[in-house]
Amino acid sequence: MCSYGISRQPRGAALVVVMLVMAVLLLAGTTFMTISSTETQIALNERAAAQALLLAEAAIQKGLARLNANPAYGGETDTPLGGGTFTVKVTTVPGCTAVSARLFVGTASVPVTGGTARAEVRAVVDTVSYPFRWAAFATVPNGILHDEVYEGVGVDRTDKELWLGSTGMVDSFDSGGGAYDPAGNSGVRGNIGANGDVTAEYNTDVKGDIQAGDAIFMPASVTVTGNKTENAASQSFPQVTPGTPGSAGLKVPKDKTESLSAETYYYQYLDFADGASLTVSGPVTIYVTGPTIPGDASGRVVRLGSNVTLGSEPGTQLRIITKSDGAPLEFVRFSAGDGFRFYGSLYGTNTDVYIGANSQIFGSLIGRTILTGVSTKVYYDQAMSNQEVCHNGKFTIRRGTWREIIPN
Image (tube, rainbow, N blue to C red):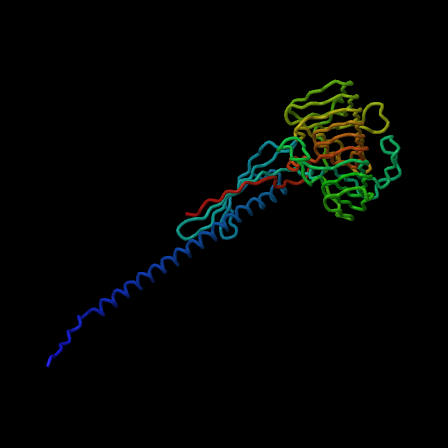
């Protein structure tokens, strides 16, 4: 008979396997603990970085409040707040007429394990506002106007705070992208409004919104691309007083051209005969300070004949600021004849504005009241939404740049 032997199994193999498995588990556990610890530290660093950034922003806001309480405020150092400290440095930079802007630099530090989280915020603050958000806006409060003849053209101004003549148009474009082009450079931001009534005569096309503090009057032939809002909240605009009174008026004869270089000018009045024009080379701001044009019984400070041109493309180079202070019944007048072409912005919150027929506005009109003639077109330049108007209000943040420093 045959017999079979059974070989002996190797001794110690199970122990080796167990030790290998334990080593793998130990390595995995150590790795997970390291990852967990690292993730925790990353989370702490991120929280501290966010805290530092918010603290730096709070430093700007706190410094701004102190500046408005004390115009001599010059900053502060290592002020404790919110689990960290902040420093505010304040320097003077060129600002508006008779106003100095301030550069605020707020830095903040927040302690964190292994280092410090730091952040910095820079902001320019000054006393300016940005009113040019409208193609045309009439600022006079509702109910102020009475039965008055507007500019001697036989138009009753009752309930006519903003009046658009028939077959007119309101559209928008961005001069940063070139001239107005209905096919390629136009938009639907030709917004108009009034703190009182808005009236548009037949066949007028408004490519934007209409906002009225009271009512909107228009026939069915008027086309409105955007929204129509009645009984809207009153819009506020800053009162602006020129820092320097005008010493003389600017009078330009028929078909002549006046050229102005980049500067701020102060004229008592503007008086342009038919066909006269104004060109600018660089940014020009004109304050029309009054008194009214000599011999003009209608109270005009701006009298433009037919076919007058003010400015040239782009309209952001020319700003005209007429009376924008005082009570609503303290006003002057701005009038332009037929065929007027304007490349710029007009700011006259206490100025009645009359624009003749077949005119074209490439910019923005802010007036006490606004009346446009037949077939007049207003093309709002969206680039003007960043233009400022100086006033004697409180300092506010005009623009800020943000930079975060990664924690140690």
